[in-house]
Image 1 (cartoon, helix red, strand yellow):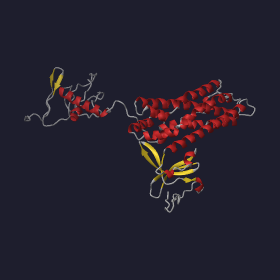
Image 2 (cartoon, helix red, strand yellow):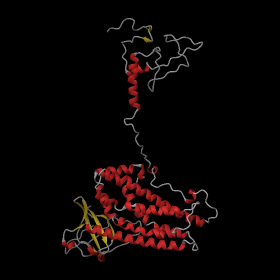
Image 3 (cartoon, one colour):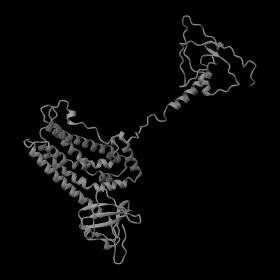
Image 4 (tube, one colour):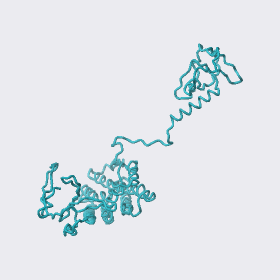
Length: 441
């Protein structure tokens, strides 16, 4: 339609009931943004005494106390358009603007994403622990400095038990039960990895309950020796758990290659409850706790006078804990040795040295590279050195014996000072058979 001659001039508003209508200039195209800029809802202003009535003239200023409620976040006052009441066209522009505003303001999901700290120290792996003297405000002034230190060590023992119980329950609730329910691993695999961990929870709950029961009103504990002497034999339950750790660690590392397992463990490690620790850190907590008992008891004894009634009991508890830990360490070493001996594969019958089946102790093992860059895994048993090449068979890790095993009496060992590293070191001439030229490993 052609534009009339009067389109350039201002058209007086014609009142129709409660609405005002003003024709729009057709020579100008309106968008949702431009419409919303000139069509914000304005609250009716009640006439005040002495106020001059408004007219449609652009030259007249609006009242200073006039309140305007913008539709969008950024509202530009269009001084060229006179204030008017809501028209259907304005309603349309406001609806479009609201839709655009809501889409930009709201997130795609109803929940807010968890923010990740880039600072590694923001999420501490250690829990905030208070001292005994800080926990109990009214510490008796009659206690000597030595007795205060004694109570601090006993308090540390109690706190360690509480933290261990919490962590073991955490492993059961957040790892074992979900993985079993979601069939991330089979029940047999989970039993191999978690072993007898669940049976250790009531053991430590029992000690914690006893220690808390002996605490007096002022927070002090008089004697712990008799209680520990009665409780320590229960640590023999650790033998089965610790002896199974080598096989459990190997199976867990193998299962991490499964994408479903890897994703589950990664999400757990990124969660707050894990304190950025992986599953194996939790599974290794009982073993690390076990070896601390002799150290804690020695420290309590150090702060206990010879005249104290707890002195003799603590000495007996220290000896008992050392015997139990030593026995479990020995059995664990034997189990590790047996595990790796079963994983050895022989290409030739001549490689089956008689010293290998008789070995009960695996002194050390680790990975090396030969001169060709091949990865070799070396086992030093008590009587023989075995060099192998790792390989996977039936989704299990095995070690294929590489050349002939070397009896330890033929080895020349050199003790290097701490921090000294010699590049290019090798084992020369160790694999010579007849006139065969030796290889460097």
